[in-house]
Length: 284
Ligand code: NDP
Image (cartoon, rainbow, N blue to C red; front, side, top):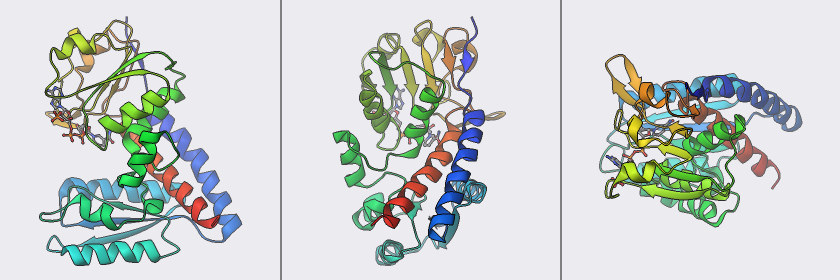
């Protein structure tokens, strides 16, 4: 058996087309386009390439992109002043701050100040709380994109055993909460999980957000499982996932390729959140 592909590239293209139309509608109604502020501190090369990709996603969607680059020596006071400026600017619909921040700046310094209404990356405690309560807020884009991929391919989630490997605040934990909302029975695994393969083998839906190439091997997958791979790890010939794709595709029923699976979905969800933030602000 060879698994079907959960093709994030194809689905994200379709979603981008629909989104661009909605953005045009917003522009026609309000006379301005939703705008995303992208704040980059320092010169981390990976962050620079993410920012480029965000810029392109904005331009494809017709969303304004206000890219601000501050030096790695930016102080806490300067960071917070910049964020307050975004909060107060009526034309800034959403804000994303590129992580990791140069030391000694921390994510908490961002979430202390950033308005939850403009937190289109879903990193503020208020949005994390809303997700935990099952209420509407901004959900982190990567897990939200993973869920959109499952739904886009009509994967039945109700009553399924879902196992999420990884408990970060930006991928694993919010994904587990999203799957719970979809009525999966969810287990979250991490480095202290005992007998990880025994747990993952129970999964109808297996999600890997680990950050270690090939950490999920074929023997860890239940035959017929749906496998979502969030890993983006540098390999010899480009990026590779957290799942041993070659082995997994012979066992799973559906699987995300890396690249081209969960990755392309992330920025579409970011664009969608920016449009939502703009709509919310315009309705106030
Ligand atoms: P983190 O490093 O923050 O979290 C990794 C998690 O995996 C931790 O909870 C850790 O457990 C767990 N883990 C690590 N090793 C093992 C192991 N051997 N067995 C079981 N659990 C393990 O990473 P992120 O969540 O930020 O990212 C995960 C992956 O997703 C990375 O490859 C990253 O590049 C990618 N990513 C992809 C995005 C996309 O757009 N698709 C966006 C963001 C990230 P513990 O908590 O115990 O340490």
